[in-house]
Length: 252
Length: 366
Image 1: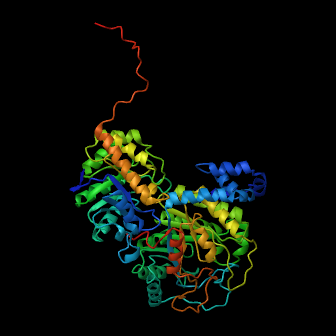
Image 2 (image 1 turned 90 degrees about the vertical axis):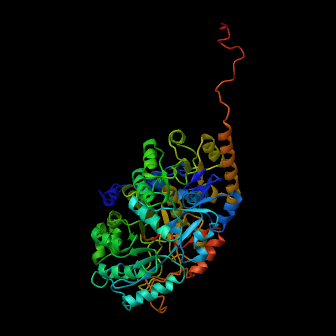
Image 3 (image 1 turned 30 degrees about the vertical axis):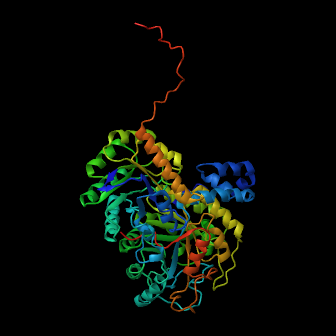
């Protein structure tokens, strides 16, 4: 898969906000072979080497700063610019949330921010509530991928938006990356089997008993799901094949 | 509509009667709910719920890790002025207490800021007493301009302001607001605040709403525990937080459960709030508002704070000092006695040892 001119082979993207120690981040990245890591600019502290979360992301990874904390397009744009100025590269995950109860994204503001930042040469991956019309507008606005949520952030509820995400996969010509809500590797596999281009996981890995092992488990599940998608699963049927077909008498 | 009217709905509510009727089954039902109603929250604050504390703790811990991760945000207060026109019976800085009054000059603010910034902290909370003449908004703003050079997130805990004034400070770079109602019971409030502008209960109660409308990113509220029956005060604090979160979903709402500490004037808190009570309050709040922040100050002793890391708390002060200019002049008298005098580095080490990560920076001005 190619995003923003970069070849991506590992389809598990990793979020970094909830680890019990920054030191676990490079370990999880290595164990899972992760290539794309997102980090909230609000947590990046270039002045404090030892506690700077960005310093724990391996050099060979693509760092994708996110605009966590932005309440509207304007703030998201400013955060993205600050991130680029701070040396975090030109990828950005747009996250515009003005609802602290469910952490659901504001699609309208997200489209606006995408348009501005794509125009400024950013590789823009917007986080959104799955909606076909919004996704189409994100394509027009210049997004590099579209990242619908599977369920609210941190909820570990799985692929609750399945039908809507499936429509995006069918209709949108960009990579569809399921971001947020996936609680188990099996749910990540499910998204990949459906044809998602990748998944982004933080809570389920960072808060697991053994985050490094869980990162590996997710990576395997993502690879398995992708392989299954490519292999084209056999049709699934609701009933066993009747041995005496109802239409067997039609022999002409 | 403001929270003032919302609170009035409970004016004739029989809290004692409610607590008496709570059964174990009620408590278990409240624990296992996905979304708690205000009365579920009250059920978890009841004396009956005390026997279920461990079960509540397990769920509170799970919810906190799920929503916030294994991280604790660190911050510290900076007292810039202690001139005060109020006479809160319980406060070390009240107008009638005799102590050296002081207001930091810009150079002194800078000196304190430098000392604090050297510890790595990026979140600071600026405090003043209530004196519009000695610490006007223009002075607060002047301090903010200096603090901005050293910190990426600035909160204020000052006297209640007008919405326009909050907006002015937001534009100057303030992103956090903190104000304790002290007491939600209006009559007790009147008794404890015999003179000064703070007598205006409603103006203070509605200050968080003005702050939300003015664009503050984080709003922290609380009742000072020990001044009145803690279960109902905890209930109203939670109700207030829930009200603000629904009315202003873009703002991060958090609470503090500060307990009375000995202060210069020697005020004896009328109500004793034990460690167990405090823990029950924090846990019940976590179940009621799974995404609500909980801030614990250095009023609490080190050993208790160590345990609280895993019990729903999301933010802790470190290297605190409650005196004006107390970091460059350690002999200065503070607003109240600090129980946990650990440095930022010591706090960070403790948090790491609990399997949590201390976070120094969680916002920057944009």
